[in-house]
Length: 271
Picture 1 (tube, rainbow, N blue to C red):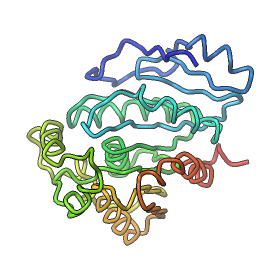
Picture 2 (tube, rainbow, N blue to C red):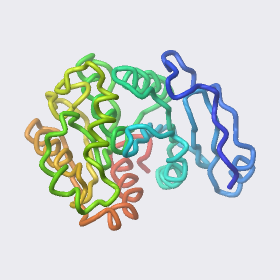
Picture 3 (cartoon, rainbow, N blue to C red):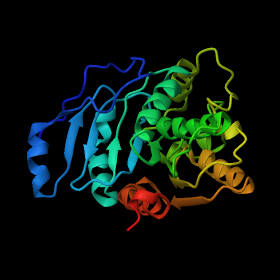
């Protein structure tokens, strides 16, 4: 497939008021859409992946990596597979690299998506944390909530006090707790680390939509998912927690698990 060509908005651009109708197709991929393949478009917010015969459902997928940065282009392949399995349009937005700008950007893109149809949220690592924070913000505002949310290897507590950060560090050669602390401090800035919009593990979780959490048992972020799932369940939230032995077993299943959960809860994705 051809390379994705993205819009001009940078990672630190304020995305408030963006219009998802301003798209430019990746012509290499778009030409194949008639053969049952996906169409990847550029937009001011980032790549938009559109499957053949797309439904009204939009999946807002929030990227994340170990450095609490990265770009949405890194998840386009996953977004293509998710779009084909769900029939949904998948939006992969950029967002600023600090709080609260990142949450503001995600909220702005969500509002644009919500105006087009029902929305499901999904994200990984910091993106999963932002998805959870957005759920809390929308609930507190009395704003329309997404149909459901999927959180993968979620970073939900920027106090970084979870025991699994130390206990599972040896199982993940690429994990560096000191590097994570540095990036977390940079992202949080002067904000209180227990602010529920920064660390949604500290939020009141009542009234949230159905949530799926996918995580590996060897993940240093394991405790964030376990604690969030327990607190959400005690608050009456529908929770689907799936813990696989390690990342090798988790990753091949993640798209299928996400798609099945989204199809179970999102109105537009139901037959």
